[in-house]
Length: 74
Image (cartoon, rainbow, N blue to C red; front, top):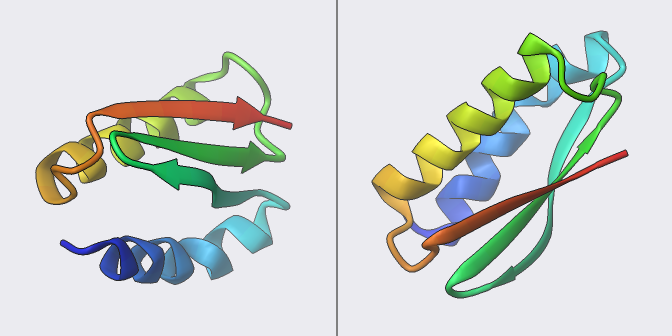
């Protein structure tokens, strides 16, 4: 999966996230590190952890140029 495909995947989640007043976006991407911004998630809850795990898995499986995945929670 190329970087644009990753952005497309994030865009496909937008309606579901919007309905819960949440959003996920790429804050920065400078290989080997990509940083996601999570907004509207309660820190440390199971939902937040699930999204982080899913995003990290997506990157690991399809965007091999990114080996470090970080998150900013707002």
